[in-house]
Amino acid sequence: MAMREECKHYESRTYPGGETVRKCDLDLAPEAPWRCPADCPSYTRRLADVDWAHGSLVAPPPPPEPEGQDIAALLDEAEDIVNAAGPAILAELAAEEKRRNSPFGRLRARFSRRTD
Image 1 (cartoon, rainbow, N blue to C red):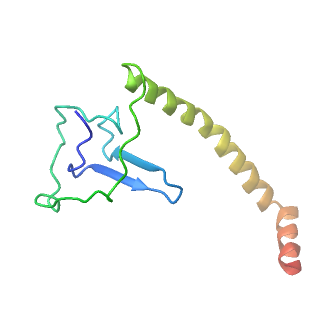
Image 2 (tube, helix red, strand yellow):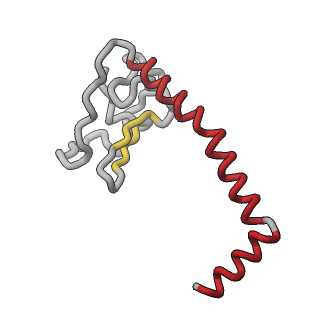
């Protein structure tokens, strides 16, 4: 079943670069943005959208479905890549914070503000 855009848990967000994110806020659609589970236990029609008809400018069409039958595995693999990068990013941020909060880092910050 295609994504149920009328579900109150469906969210679509378009960023300034033109990229659009479509997802289930409850993370119950493992094949988002292409499909919702046919028997989703949390499907609830939005009350504000019950009798509304949306125009064509609401959201661009979803991206083409990837080749192959196992979309959930593809999305899991992408999620694993993002999750694997997380600890390295957090370590970089912690090192930067530590450097910034060191006595020399605070001194450097004080003098750089005066020259700006």
